[in-house]
Length: 295
Image (cartoon, rainbow, N blue to C red):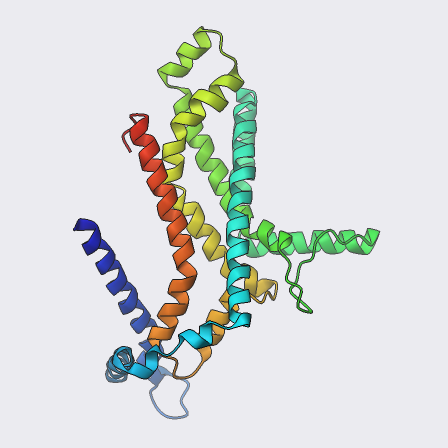
């Protein structure tokens, strides 16, 4: 019952947010026709909010499945989901690799590595995209070597480069989180007991420590999932990719589009992501209970 109330409230707040988003531009208007000064028009805003909400109850507003169930829309949908899930796999692999290599470094070197991770994690995505573009352009100009396809042109949509760009900040964030969890776990008594018994550092890290941090990592992995998702908006726009974000953008620019249609398009896109997030969280809780870890 508690979960039912939670998800019902979540759905209602999502609908309310969508209605507010669609009616929000009507809140502002020029004070005098031809003037450059904007003013507030609360009456127009509430009128637009009521009119938008009323569209939910119009039968014609719910005739949108045929427009979504087209080959071009499905191709964009699957392409964007492919970028998201490949980015997640790349994030987990590279982030884990960085964390485990970090734990095998001498203690004095770890502080320097942390400074490097903090520096790159603080860089904005736009700067990272620009730096990688310049690097690839320089390699192509000097050596006539095209390492990856960057832009979606002539019907060919790239995967590797958008996936790398989409994963850079999430994998750095994931590596930092994993390092923090590992360092805290490495100070516990069972690690000291294993060292006293003569177990190697690799055995302690990959067998005992990893099994104990999996529940905590899985529970907090939802942050990485939604970070990858939000980065996709920037990546598809910057690299002219014909993905599902472009489809949503065109839909929002369509005059008179019903809120039910927007809600369906966004919901269909978010559903696989939410399912994966729920499965990861569920597995993390089960693994925590099995190992007697209170999360």
